Length: 62
Image (cartoon, rainbow, N blue to C red; front, side, top):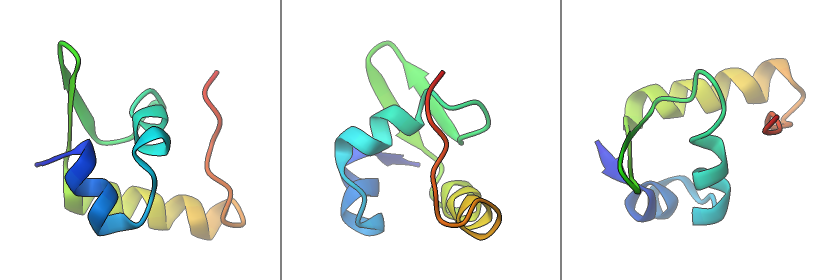
């Protein structure tokens, strides 16, 4: 499990984008109050799946 900052450094995505992704249904993030923890391997697989099936476009919140 990684913090938003740690996952940002490893993935190359911005912290703000990762915080937004944490609200998308199915994204492997756990919330404990304001702290967000991300399961690295599951998040990498989730992002790869979306990149492959949605022409590299991430889902929007809503």
